[in-house]
Length: 401
Ligand SMILES: Cc1ncc(COP(=O)(O)O)c(C=O)c1O
Image (tube, rainbow, N blue to C red; front, side):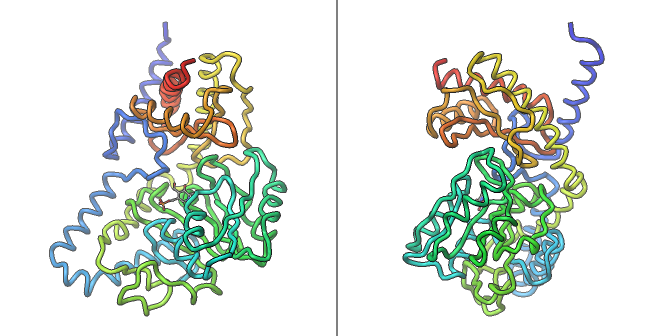
C-alpha cells in the first residue's frame, strides 16, 4: 500500500501541474512534452493579442497608417534589450525560416556556391541553399562527439567555394548545445549563420560575442510569445546588404526597420511579444530552463528504467551524464536495440503516441532510435511515467515485440 506522505507528495505535484496548465488553453488531458516545437501560448498572452486585434479593428486605417510603425519599433527595441544586443542590430522576422532566406540573399548565394551544414542541423537551410543552386556539404559528428571533433567536422568541410557555415546553437533532432564560438573561430573568415531557434529563453547567449555574421532565433518556442515571432541579428558589416523578405513601401527605411512592415499583415503576434516575454520573466525566466534541466535528468532515468523493464536485455546501459552537451529543455534517451529501423518507424511510433494523447517525438538518428524528452513550466515528474507507458505501448505496436 502507498504511504500517506507519498500520496500527499503526488497530489501536490498534480495540483501544481494543474495550476500551471490552467494558465494555458492547451488540452490538459494531452501530455505536451514537445512544447518547444511550435510553442505554447499562455491564455494571458492570447488575451493581450486579442486586445491588439480589437484596437486594429476599431480603426484599421488609422492603425496601419499612423500607429503600428511606432508600436513595432518599440517592440523591436525591447526584443533587442531582451536578447542583450545593440540598438539597430536586430530585425523582427516571423520565424527562423524567414531569416534563412534573408541571409542567403544577403550573401548573394548562387549557382556553384557551397554551404556547410551539419547532420544534426534543421533541414531548411540546405533546401533554401539548393533552390538557389548552391550545394550543401555536411559536417557529420556523433551525439557524444567532443568539442574538438565537432569543430574539426565543420572545418574539414570548408573549401574555397564555401560561402556560409551554418551551425545550430541547439540541435533539433539530437537536443545538443554545439560549441558555436569555437566553430566560428575555426572556419574564419568564412561567415557563420547561427540557427538559434531553440536558444531564446533557454540559453543566456552573448550574441555579438560569438563572432558570427548572422544569428536568428524564434521567440515562439520557449519565450511564450504568439507563433510567428522571431528575430534576426546581423553583424554590422552585413547590415547594408540585408533586404527584408517582403519588399514593401517601407523597404527604403533600411535594416532593421525595413523588416517591420511586410505589407498589410496581422501584426498582433508581434505586438503581443512583450506580453509573452513578461510571462516568461514572471514565471522565472532562465530558472524555467534550469528547472527543466533537473527534471529531465530524473525524467530520462524514469523513461530509461521503464524501457529496460519492458524490453529486458535490449537497452543500452544508462549513463547519467549522457549526452554531455545536452540542451537545457530537451534530452535524448536511447530506445531499445533494433526496434526503430528508420525514420518511418520513428514516425509510426510518433503517430501511435499522439493517438494516445502523448506529444513527445521519437527520433531516428545515425542508425539508432531515441525519444526526445522535453521540459517546460507545465511538465512534472509524473509526466515521464505516462510518457514511458505510451512509448512502450507504441513501440510494441509498431515493432510487434
Ligand atoms: C533548429 C531549428 N531551426 C529552425 C526551425 C524552424 O523554425 P520555424 O518553423 O519557426 O521557422 C526549427 C523548428 O523546430 C528548429 O528546431
